Length: 530
Image (cartoon, rainbow, N blue to C red; front, side, top):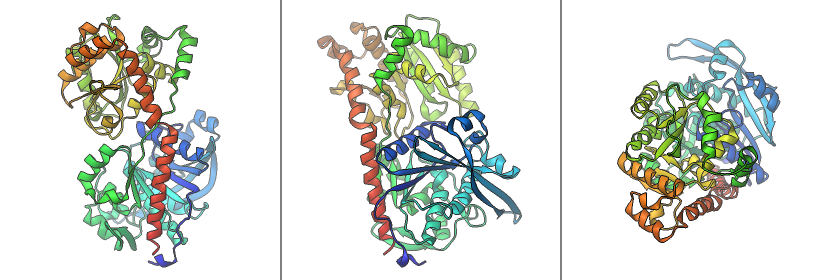
């Protein structure tokens, strides 16, 4: 270890972002949109941004290839790895390059069958541990092909080993590059050291300086890895220069409980943002349907959802209010709670825009719940037209987000940007986004997690408040009394929703948060040179 020779960047002018999702190319959940917003914010500030990710086979899609003009990069990384069985396994990696709105994109791909079957798998998170390991091998070579960045920004556990390896390679070039680790959703598997080592993924086992509450101390990666029981996320928390997450609640409640509040000294919060513009959405609705109103919801359902919906599940009674549920079909998102809450919300129908992640058991459970409440909900897992998708937010009575845990909740701010209130479980980042109308100037309702009765009452209340304006039928006494004294409350809620987003969750907010976080990481990387 020769850290006394290292030089830290004096200013952040060039950033490499390592990710598994990037919205224009591939998006499974909120990660792809969040990283896309990061890149836009940095580019707006004049920072040179490069996105580094596995191809997930997207370079083989002719529509994507032609749209973004992907071309092969003069890059190869080929060799052999040693498995736990002692056998040699060959790999051969190439790369594709594109420029999207001034942001450079590098996709790593397979150049032989065994590599391609992993890197080029269309399912983003199939063989995720192997995609991560091969990405680690890729960036070790990339470090010597490209002009070095001033900062590396990694996102979730899949990018920890690539980020650490890339930083280490740049250190061999005499540069102490800060490493920022954003945890969008906490959790990762555990592996033996062999997985991370130079025998497989490619990390060396030299001494490296690790922040220990008040100072950097040298330690070998293998020793630290074993101390952390091979947990990839934990390893990233310790070896990164700065940790970023998407809400203060998630930082304190989740990450502090996992790793201790000592990480506060190297932590920051960078909120996700949205660029949704209510004027543009209303313009599309006006041009297509002639007016903007709740009735448009039924036109969107008929034209964009019904033909792709799950067979046998539809909405029969058009006299009920439309509420929207959006998210991955996993227990985390609590879509089952929203369906069960219909039992206490007789004036509500649900439109469920789900993202299938292959959780067959949960999807069967959802079908069972829908069968018991036939005619009350329509569900699709097919991506719908983007304009229609945004319009549905605008004309719904409310978005329902019964997440069991939620680091942030991107769809919540997208809904608020359209003046549409949110009913959400009081968990994680949702507590920082939703201001309960019962507390004053609010934009939604927060309910107790797992309480379908309270959730149903909130849904029924917003159906009568925002859709029908039948204020006397609102079942929650405090809301009913409030609106009977102030019949402008529905419009005030819409204004509060839009103002909340404009004040906290726009690109200019994110620019300042990123700059602050990056500068702190830069200083931390300087300390590693001492």
